[in-house]
Image (tube, rainbow, N blue to C red):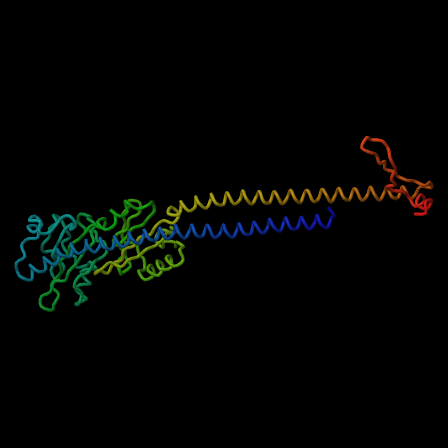
Length: 361
């Protein structure tokens, strides 16, 4: 094979290898993107379902707690309110969700309660000031409140009491923050944050890996926008609370100024995708290495053929110079034999110029 043909063949082989590697890279990127999109779609679908269930559960909890405040207000307005403890003992006020119920007068003094111990005056609490200040506010869900006497945690559901058009105190029923999120958090994957956020930007309940917290702050509008961004791009976002990258779902709680928030730990949720990616990349690396090895072998062989051809050309040049430099006529003959091996003729295969001139050739 001539040298230009060898180089052309080498170029074609290398171009083919590069084309195959390019196509492999393109298909690899497409395959991994499909795997990622499928995995993220499943993650977001699951988190959306959990957020919907959490929102429904939150509505159910506060409906039942709110019924207690509505009952107390109704009986008080009718002038037929018995001691709250008797309502509790009779099962009218359920202990399943409601921690305790109390009534405070217009000065904030607690005048009746189902709890054995409770704060004597709540006039300095923000939820009391808000009801006194906002005349059109009927029911509110305050941030988690710590009873100053026994340290009990509770989310106050407060209802305004009125004497005509004037503020006449409030009735409050509290629910433990764990009643909202702990049950859901137990069934979720590691690192998943389950929480109920108020429209005021304060979490009423937030549970991660069995740890219950409250009071963290997050802007609801910002959180909703970021959730929409996650669903649109498929990329997790970093939590403003603990800095962990998570897939986010936010659902408005029906009838109450609350939001159900489910944030799935991206690192943990994408573990299956990472394993798939590592396996695919490993096979692709092996294939690419084999292709590159084949290209290297072809290049080495071509270089060897080129070197062999140069040596042959050099030897032929030296041989020709030797023939032409001789003062004698030099002829190289090749024997022609028959089938039996007997010599039949001699054929001139090469000669110098002097030998050629002797025979007129």
